[in-house]
Amino acid sequence: MINMHKNRKKSPASGIKSGSGNPKEALSAEPRVIREGYARKGDVVAVVEPKVPGKPGRNVLGEQIPPPEVHEPHLVAGRNIMVEKGTLYYMEVDGIVQVSEDERSIYHIRGKMYRHGRCIVSVSDDRMTAMLSVIPPLGGARAIEPADAFEEISRNGVVFGVDEKAVEETVMRAQAERIAQDDVVIARGRNPKDGRDGKVEFKMVRASGSTVTVLGDGRVDFKEQDLITNIEEGQLIAILKKEQEPVQDGSTVLGDVIKAQSGRPVNFETGTNIRVEDLGEEIHYYSKIGGQLISDGMHISVEPMLVIKGDVGTRTGNISFEGDVLVKGSVNDSFNVYSKKDITIEGNVGNCVIRAGRNITVKNGVLGKNRGLVSAGGTVTVKFAENSTIQAGETINVQRAALNCRFTAGGKIVAVWQKGQIIGGELRAKDGLDVKILGNESEHRMDVYVGTDFFLEMNLQKIRENMKKYDLALQKIVLLIEKLERAGADQEGAEKKLQEMYEAAFKKRTAIKIALSELKNKEAAILGRLDVVTDARVVVRETLFRGVRVTFGRTIYETEEARGGVSIRYNKDLDRVEVRRK
Figure 1 (tube, helix red, strand yellow):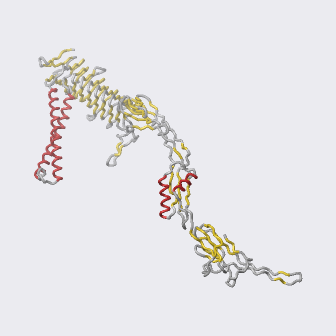
Figure 2 (cartoon, rainbow, N blue to C red):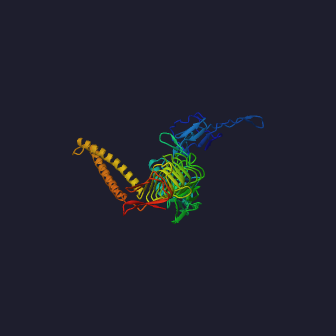
Figure 3 (cartoon, rainbow, N blue to C red):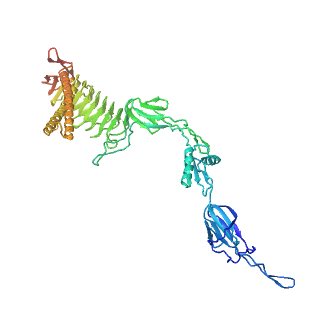
């Protein structure tokens, strides 16, 4: 900054008006540079202080002595100089300030754009990023070279993740475009790669816990609830992925190491009936049995039995389970129980569907109301039954009595405990009957069929029902093909859509014919086995009443009067029914 002070000797050009003067006054004389220096834009480069007149003095004789004359400085502002209040001179650009004096002792000040190129390196607070700013030179000053930038980067301690190409491109772009490049990222740190935490992935759908099912029409079904997670034997339940060791340490751009961490282990426990298979990085968990999954997220076990502590009804909804089912109460009307294994019901069974892959035990009675079904792949055991349909792949056991029921057994129908009486209805048993009392004094009409695999008859009925459906579908597809042929779909040049419909119809007709052929083969196989009559016997230990008709294949025996204990069998060699006293 230049101060233009008073008390300067007046120059020969003092005839020019003094004071701050016109900042942009033009002079014909060529000024002489007396001072120059570097200043930035906005710097105060000169201050003009106005003259202050002196005061007169006196000599010893008391005579007044006039003050010396003071000089009024005159500073003319040139290019790139801004003046405020007539006394403050500011630099408008970065560059060189030149002060010159002309022959009249008038000062001139001007700014010349001039700036050395500069590069600035900054580092983010987290030390994971370094930025480079490059300011290009002005006024012919020395340009910045990539080497200057790398030197500044090194001086700031940036040693990791430097993108040399980005540095060079930033410097060259600043030079070529003559525009400052601000905060260009030229180095990045590396985040650590921690080991993965251990985690458990369940490979089956767990019960949602919902106590209702919302149907498509908006109605709510309280029977279909989602409270039980069924598991099959050998099913994959979950996979535990073990925690990993640290993968790679990280680093800041200043070279500080950021240690990677090990993954956290997961605490996963197993209970009963779980098979564990360790495969190194993973552990697989399989169920040893079919049953109910018991899990709190970090512990699993499979229980072979589902226990319903009360009735099966609106509180439980229908029951479907892979393992054994124990119902402590009864099964209310219109509710169903399914199991792939055993079902035990300690109360009664109403108008329900009860199905088991193995055995069913009803410790009280079955009151089917001519609509329910109790069906087991193995044995069915009931205390009593009334107006019920019961099917068993093996034996049907009645402990007390049965009234007007439809029994079908792949083995025997047995009622030899307590009263042991079966009255009315329709009984089918491949291997025969063993009962105490068959019929009653009222001579209820009842039919007993033995010696034939009646499940084959049921399968035959289903096959014939399916054959009717396929026959109807075949008729419809044949009509469609005929219609398409009349439309010309089978001719060359036919519309593409018609051709596609025609080809699809032909494929469907072929598939239906194949399915019908397979069903007819199954029908023939069953028919061949239906004529086989086994060596079945109907054993009545106490009383056989009138009204009971026993059929062995195509041979019928009908009781004409009540009889004591008898054994009834079909003699295939003699082609007749034999009745013997017990």
